[in-house]
Image 1 (spheres, one colour):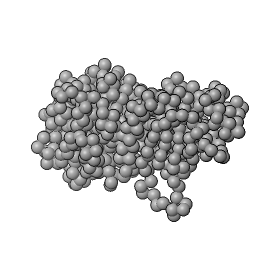
Image 2 (cartoon, one colour):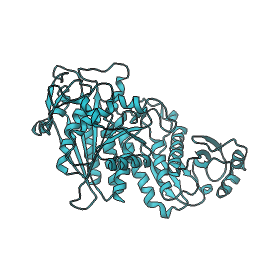
Image 3 (cartoon, one colour):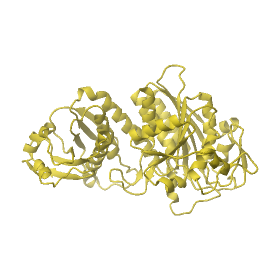
Image 4 (cartoon, one colour):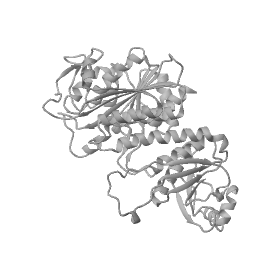
Amino acid sequence: MSLTLALRGGDPSRVSTPLLAVALHSGGVFPRVLAALDKAYGGVLSRAVAQADFKGVRDESLLFIGSGRGPSRVLLVGLGENEDTYAAVTRAATLAGRKGNAMGVRKMAFWAPQLSGDTVEAAAFGLSRGSWDFMDYKTQPPAKDRPRPLVEAVVVATDARGSQASFAAGVALGEGQRIARRLQQLPGNVCTPEHFARTAREIGKRHKLRVSVMGRRDLKRLKMGSFLAVAQGTPQDPKLIVIEYRGGRRGDAPVALVGKGLCFDSGGISIKPAQGMELMKYDMSGAAGVLGAMDAIARMKLRVNVVGLIGSTTNMPSGTAMNPGDVVTAMNGKTIEILNTDAEGRLVLADVLAYSARFKPAAIIDAATLTGACVVALGNTATGVMGNDQSLVDEVLSAAKRGGEPGWPLPMWDEYRELIKGDIADIKNTGGRGAGTITAALFLAEFVPAGVPWVHLDIAGTAYSESDLVVIPKGPTGTPVRTFVEFVRGRAR
């Protein structure tokens, strides 16, 4: 269900809405600007703060039911003591949106102290993120018993007139992440490579972007033997998808965003264990992030040229599937010895990275749910970040922090490269269990166009969650949409 967002100023006590979420810092001081609202509620709001019934800590909430004019309900939400106001408002608005959606109110409003500029963006994005839900395949109860989804939300700002641009950016970020999360959540029999191509075309049509889609015949013509090796075990037509945004000056080198789009990964002949294999529908999260970011970038009209590239297929065991021990030749001429068919994402990305050379990119950032080793190393909190250019790595880490998708750098020392030297070919597609995230990145580095700064994001632990994260339910997180957009936005400033 889509969410319509609006921006307004004025006294929050005068907002006629079924639910007003009020975000407050910890510290026990009730804001004077809410005196009229507090009076309308008989002073119960300020008493709750004064008596520490509501402390304002992160993720805390307390609901009040009112009567008469103004908001029908007030939901106090804690901002905590976070010095990062943008992050605190984003989280509080996300929690408010999620609770509003669960309560069955069709409309709500959100207020926080000194809400203007960047924090208005944070509020709009947070409300969109929190209200997102996926009910496509659940049988609904009769209409009279059916919960009403949240469809409208208002950000009540201190400076509404001066925050229009920030509000629009927040809406764009929310819409982009919704695209990514929906793609992630769809089952593999629906979110196929063809569905990815169709979604890219829809984004292209909406924003007048150039979209190119290439199938198996085109990949053969391009001599993408590495990508085709993964696709040879499935009857579904693989897709190389290119979506181009031209917001910068004519002739300026674009930023290339590259995503792994494995719509389902069984592991192939090196088949995965049955337990948890259903989660491998999320193996296309990098590609979902590219499409979500491209939509947001186009909505924000950023003055940068950007090209999104996606390699999409499925990795299946069959009579035609690649085998351990096979040798294939990638687009750039390098030969690859396939030791493990479950190390397939890097085979797809190898050819997509090589293909990106024709756009002469200023920088390349790829994202992939690439290695279980990254989950072991960093858990589900941080994305693994590696690259061939330290200044670009630092730039991406800064963008990831701004976007609330923190990353952590891992070394790419030459000593690790020895682990993937081929026995009968140029390179092996796995270096074994040790340093698996690093050797996977080093494998990709072999296919990055010469002289181009490049960063790899391993989002295996951050693209989706197997448990409820309070503000985000179990399932897709939308990572790395924000990292991609914040990086491009940083280049536009």
